[in-house]
Every structure is written in structure tokens, then in C-alpha cells.
Length: 208
Image 1 (cartoon, one colour):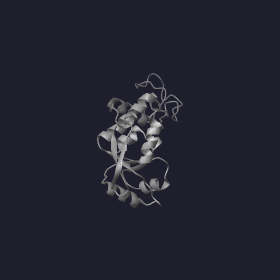
Image 2 (cartoon, helix red, strand yellow):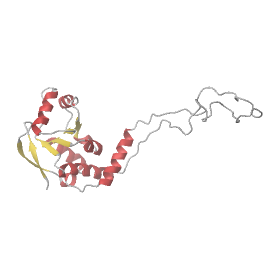
Image 3 (cartoon, one colour):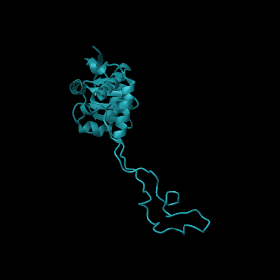
Image 4 (tube, helix red, strand yellow):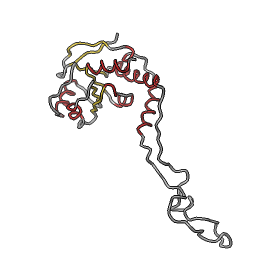
């Protein structure tokens, strides 16, 4: 059974916690991580790029010159794609890039991401995270106490406005809910910090 040290907000070790091996000690499957990251990035694309075809640009209603006898190439419209200011051939149109991989693949990739953080000793567990009021310096002090640097994903079990407001102005620090974490967010951050309640919530939601 994998175990991890538990720290308080002062950075002191106060115990240890047993983790679910299915989630935190699984085989790291890099090909699944790649596939799921691609899916998540595609799903975040807005798909709003748009160009006009020759039927949509203005002008070009009449033939620019007669068909024969001018010595020039024949043309039917000045809004042909080969003209400056003409339409775009096969240009992008608004579309959705969204697609979904099978649930088992997505779940296995999440196990791989969480397990990679545990095996690389980049997973920290707090016995609790309570902020009486929104203050950025409190989260900065927490990071200093835990000797954590770089990009950090701070995970809580329930929505906490004080944690969110206190961390949103710190470069590289992101707060998230346990039931909403995903592979992309985990891999984009150097360290993963969860409260004990968040660990329980992750095991409850994703162990099935």
C-alpha cells in the first residue's frame, strides 16, 4: 500500500496517509497520457476561425474583360481566389474540434498522471487548508513553508472562495476541485498539493 507524508500549513510533518494503489500506484502509460492530452486540448479549441469564399466576398459581379481578343488570360470575376482581394480556397470555417475517448482510457490516463506525481515525489498532502479570509500572502507563506516552487496545482475537496481568491494572483499557482481535476492540469504543473479531504474525494469519485 503506497503511503505519503502529511504536512500541516506550517510545513511540519504530522503523519502519513495510505493511498489507493489503483489510483496512485498504477502503471504510467505514456501513450494514454498523450492521447488524452490531445483530446483535452482539442476540446478547449474555440474553433472560431473563419474566411470568406469567392461567393461571400464583395464585388466581382461582372466579367472584368471580354473572353477573347485582349491578349490577357480569361477571367470571369475579380473575386476569384487567384486575385488579390478574392475569396479563400478551402479556408477555415467555424467548427467544433471536440471529441471524446472511451471512459476507460480517460480514467487510466488520470491514474497514470496521478501515479507519475506520486512516483516522482511531487505529490504533497495537507492535513487541512483553512484560510479565514482571502489573502495572497497566506498562500505564498504556505508555499514557502512547504518549500515548493514552480507551477503548483492546489486541490481541495469542496469549493473554497478564500483559497481561490488567495491563489489566483500568484504566477504558476492554480486551485482546482478534486472531482474536476484532469490529466492536462496535472501534467502542466510541477507539483500537486492535495488536502486529505481532496485525496478522499479523488478516491471516492475516480476509484470506480
